Length: 69
Image (tube, rainbow, N blue to C red; front, top):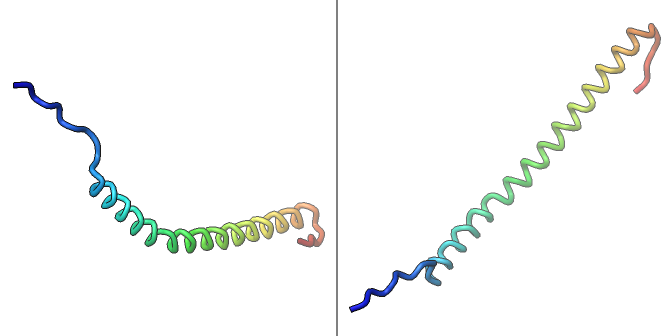
């Protein structure tokens, strides 16, 4: 008798289970990603402000004059 080759791939149930797991993970990660992006924007704005202040201080010291930001 001939042997049948084993089928390769996923069954519909395995595919649906995988999609359900992915949907749960994305549902949990999406709000956290939004918070991460907002915190990153705040940090970058604060860093830019500190750099501007340091640059103004350096220029004021170099020129011996008041510097306006």
